[in-house]
Length: 157
Image (tube, rainbow, N blue to C red; front, side):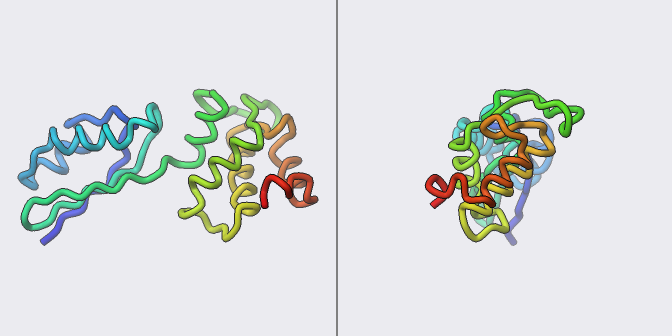
């Protein structure tokens, strides 16, 4: 019978301690090898929490699936901020260029409810609202209105 372990690990810095070690130890696999593999695959997301699924089958074969960090973590990394604004409606903590918003939207597209890039970009901008990050110097709500008005259609085609 196959076992599945789903955890959030710090990108590139997973350890054999909790939550991985206690979950993988009883399965009889080489935990250090799995942790090293996870760190290799999550290195590009250094400092962010990354969802990882470890599947172990009956023959002790290990299959790793590395997800993409939450949209909030990606927005904060791109904006260069450590934490969101305590008062996001009045105080901005960072600014994103539209290109960064598009890059995040493309990364997260598979796990979003959006069917096209334009609506995915608006979803990311919605996350910017709650984090307190502006887009192209505009509040995220103004940026969403600009997308709706077609201001950036040539970039979102």
